[in-house]
Image (cartoon, rainbow, N blue to C red):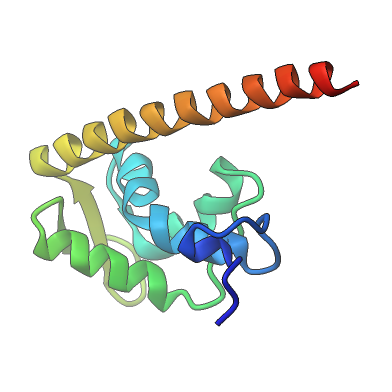
Length: 133
């Protein structure tokens, strides 16, 4: 196994496939954030991913979104119901629960900490670069 893969904390910078790993890591937070603005069906959430988060491609397998939503529902972070109001087949609509809002706040806190660490890293990187010239 390559000792410098980004997954294991090695020293190599992220390469191809990094966005897929990021999607797997942040999928729950992103879906909860999208649901914060109101209930939506899975296809709408998948479509909105790249519009709301430039650089984050819609997953090639839309089933990823539905499996993530099912997991969030099992965890109590979202609830769903079948919507029969439009012509055609019924669609499952997902909504954020109070527990989901609390999870989303936890993600915000964690990502804020990570952002601060990244900013500190970049500041030190720039400072060290000025010293070496």
